[in-house]
Image (cartoon, rainbow over all chains, first blue to last red; front, side, top):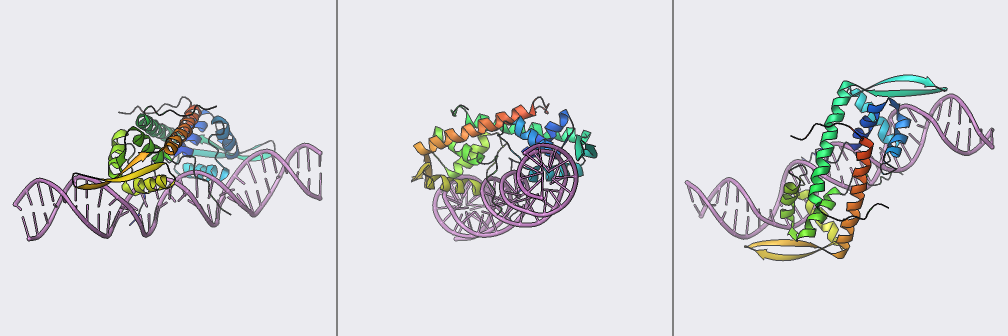
Length: 115
Length: 115
DNA sequence: GGCATATACCTTTAACTGATAGGCATATAC
DNA sequence: GTATATGCCTATCAGTTAAAGGTATATGCC
């Protein structure tokens, strides 16, 4: 029966979220903006991607959350756990290996320089 | 209505196929093995990915094919067209921009060195 | 001859991810 | 009081890729 393994390209949203949370704890809405900012709008993840990812990571024990009310706003802050740090290290390694492999395969393909 | 844009991560199979075909023409079965070899088995695309991609690229005018019988084997060789070269340049640029953006966002995340 | 394996082409099917679109609530600005 | 920005969340859909199967020929082996 057709059962697909997750594609080799997946897990980047997770990777970005974990890496941003490594620096400091953040809440979901903030992450959406920070991902946009950190990638120069090359990667733009909507809330419909970020929130489910946060919930999944918390369920896996990679994040822990606590509510805090700031300026009359109730926010759910997420912080990395040791499990999350390990996950980040792992995903980062996979990503590095992947990009290097593809870079090697591309060899000297000229691309239009980013303007 | 829910209409998904293609994910920012897509198009890598196409990119790999085009980049390998830039060096020399190949047939589908050969591409499957060359992609595996060129990426050190980091990226392994099955025939179910490669053949449809080839057909799509040909329909777009990015590739042209011709049948050739070699060693009693009937093979369909694919070669890049100018359209395909342009496509390769474009995809390569997108990929470079993407990996750089993600690399920047990751900043100094230590990853386990590939063994 | 009969069988397994490797080559070579292709399609069908389905899972998974991520994108879109919404719904809810509060605060502030006009 | 209405619009906009913040902040959380879920439901649903679509595109891409993965897996599996289906056909056919060639070669090596018993």
